[in-house]
Image: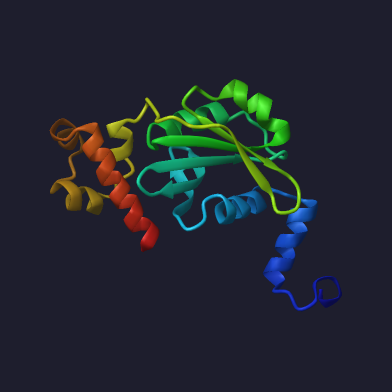
Length: 185
């Protein structure tokens, strides 16, 4: 190891190897998080239905980033975007250059696309800016609250009653607060 990397931290040495020879999802996620989303509140591998959103960025808005490397297939992408679009205001696919045209043909109008180039220091290019999802669902959001969050926000945990009493926008704002607390805890 010392011959190859000198006194460099072993974790950084492995990161360098991934960058050079095998830019997989782990590497892309780490590089994207550090370079594109720096200084923000992030949740990784957030469960949504039977999918897992790679990165959720929580701030003034909630954005979701699904990463597709050259090693991934796109069979589930349409379903993933559908699920994410019910919960998050902005949905992006972060894909390798060779996946761009196929991703572009799959994603709906509101979904953004960011292309990364597999080279030293991974470069990102926003090819299509996301617009606010038209598919936000109060019910889908409420399904992602913990029971204690429902009680804290609404004084009850009956999702049907909450949905009747509060607007979708109010529920979305409360969801942002809940996700922010999860980021800092």
